Length: 158
Image (cartoon, rainbow, N blue to C red; front, side):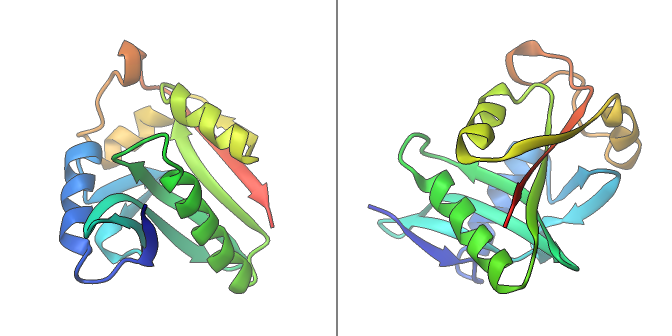
């Protein structure tokens, strides 16, 4: 069984390495904003002393953006627990919503977010063309060979 902990200096090297591998990090782009993930707070799912998932977020005003969610062991509830931890933090900070951006190829995550209660708020057509100007490492194709073109914004009201 895993526990959810705030990311500390102990967890940060692993989280940073995972983001570098999975996202060509440490920078990620959403809605034309570059996020340095090394500076963002978050939570880690820990099992037997190892990080098996992590979530990073950014609170701005009364909104909380979930900037990174990743699970190394899917189907065990860690992703859901990480989102709940971010949502509780957002509630405690007085946020009115939690939102996130994902790309059009990420059909697995899109299904997950909708099952979790997130609603599609907006579709930003061809947003990845602009994002690549900020981060050229963003590939042209993503999951299942689907061309990476659009950003989908999902939100859940608190």
